[in-house]
Every structure is written in C-alpha cells, then in structure tokens.
Amino acid sequence: MAPPLPRLAFRPATPDRWADVEALFGKNGACGGCWCQFWKQSNPEYRAGKGEANRAALRRSVTRGEVPGLLAYAGDQPVGWVAVEPRARYRRLAVSRNLPVVDERPTWSVPCFFVARGWRGRGVAGRLLAAAVAHARRKGAPAVEGYPVDSDRPLAGAWLYPGAFSTFVRAGFTEVARRARTRPVMKKELRGRRVRAR
Image (cartoon, rainbow, N blue to C red; front, side, top):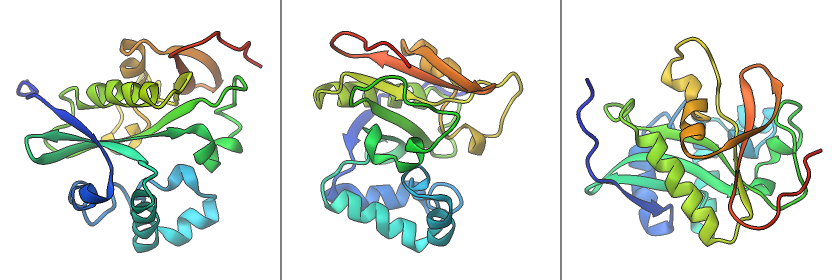
C-alpha cells in the first residue's frame, strides 16, 4: 500500500521557480527530452528539438510569464507538474484527428502530467488536475478540456502522461467526444452556457 499523501502546495511555473522545473524534470526532460513541448510542436519540430532545444523552449515560455503549467510541492520538494494553458497554445491539438474541437469557446486544456518517481500512484495527478481547474477558473476560462487514456489494461506511467480517464471522471469532467477507442475528449464547464458541440 502506498504511504498516505502529505499536504501538497501548488504553484505556477514562474521564472523564480525554473530551477524547480529542472529539478523535477531531470536530465530526461520529464520523458525522452520532451520538456512538455510535444503538444506545442509539429512532429518534425518535436523530433529535432528533443533535449536541449525543448528545454530552452520551455524556459523561454516560463521567462515570458506565460505560465505553461503548475508545480506540486511537498514541502520544498517539487513532486509533480501539470500543463494547463488555453487550447490555442497547443498547436498539435489544432490538427489532431482524434481530439477534435467540440465548441467555439476559448477553452483551456490540460494535456499532460508528470509525477516524480516515488510519488506515483498516490493521487498526485488528481490533486494536480484540481489545481489546474482552479487556475483556469481564476484566469476566466469558460471550460477546461483533457485528453486522458481510457484503457482496460494496465499501462506504464510513461504512457499515462495525458492522465487517466478515471482521474478526470472523479474531477467532474464529462466525455464530449471520442474518435479513438482509448482517447476521449473530457470537458468540465466552469462558467456560462455550453455551446452545442459539433
């Protein structure tokens, strides 16, 4: 049984916390040199940038004050990350056949999680998702989307970077589209009237 989860604090990825982003992501940039750039780049750009170029891209985003994600802290230790920004900033979503735009509002997206080893399987992702929703609400987002994996077989942590379906369901998200068997589009309304899905 996993040990109980201690109290966590959630902070935006700001320039003064860049060292914590680097410490959490480590030499692999979270996973395979990604540095949370997969959703923001085309395939050729992503392949070419794996590693140092992607690290520099994320640092530029943080330095510009874009707040590309939130960090979870246990005391002073960064233990998790969630990407959360307006959907329009994730270029790969705009061309995805499996993750369609379902309405015309400026929805925010939660496309990626990273939890440090030793902290996985303890509910950190669910807490990160709740923090991401609260952050988007404060910024005036009308709704938040996620694109989790819904699989009937166990998956290694690396394949669960979009989050697990059950995590989004528990957080009050509703499935609004599914073009691929294991990849639903999940949405949580934050304010205003829902626009009819396409």
